[in-house]
Every structure is written in C-alpha cells, then in structure tokens.
Image (cartoon, rainbow, N blue to C red):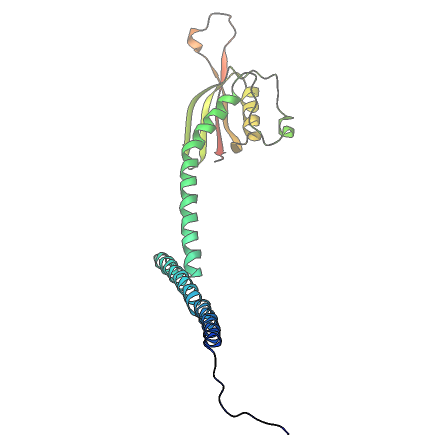
Length: 217
C-alpha cells in the first residue's frame, strides 16, 4: 500500500542558502545577457546610424557646393554654340589675313632680290619648274627703277642689258611661287647719253622694260 506524506518538509538553512546563491547566479546571467543584448541591439546600432547620418550630411554639403558652382555656368543652346564658334573663327581668319597682308609684301620683295641675285634661283613649288631657266644667267646688269603694288597687282619698271635679260627675268617670275601671270608690257632699246659718245665709238644701249604681275599672298 502506497503512502503519501502531505506534511511540508522543513528545508535546512544550508539548502536555503544554496538555492539563493543559485538564484543569484541565474539572475546575474540573465542581467548580463540582457545588458549585452541591449548594447548590441541599440547602442551599437545607434552609433552606426549616427555615423551614416554624418556621412550623408557631408555628401549633401558637397552636392550643394557643386550645384552652386554649376549654377554659375550658363548652358548655351546648340544653335548659339554654333553661332559663337562661327564668329570666333571669323575673327581668327581676319587677324590671320591682316598679318598675312603685313608680312607677305616683305617676302615678295625678298623674292625679287633673290631673282636678280647672282647664283640664286626663285622659290618654286617643285624642281621641275626650274628646267627652263638659264642657270648661268648673270642678273647683275638689271636695275629696278619703279615698283608699285595696288590690290596685289605689281607694276615693275627698270633697265636691263638686253631683251634676253628681260625675258629671263619674266621666266623666273613666272615659275616663282610669289607671282602669277607676269607679262612684259614694254621693252624698248635706248641709247645711253648719245651726245656724249666718242667719235667712231660703238653706241651703248640699254633696254627699258615694264612688267606687270599678280603678287601671291
């Protein structure tokens, strides 16, 4: 026959203290776990949020600064860009033409000096253009008495030893890169100081000439 004792048993003080210590240990573990959970769940997450919020604010400040800089620049329509580019190119071309007009007459005069210099040949675009020139020609007896330029048209007057000298001068101007369409307008033989010639002495003559040409700028 089974017997059940329903009378409360008295717990000894030693066992009571053991239970209290156990309860304190469990409570400490729970408190530590709760603290760690709160720290990782709220404290650390909050610091990350604050850090990200600071990064966002800094990025916003930089974006606002860039937008302020961009607002200072005017975005032009494509048609206006093309128009401004054409005007600028026109100014550049005008300046280039002015500089060319200033400098090219000097180069033309240098070319004439080269043509009538002993041992020199005109400036040509290719070696084949010099095939018709007399490389042994002596240009020293040629003198220019007048040189006039208007609207790129050159009027050249002077004296030469013979008609051959005038022809060779025109040939050299014809192959030169600085002249176009040279034409002999006049080539007349004249006697030098006929009243001062000695008796039975041969007459001394010269050829006066006029040449026109277009100067190439």
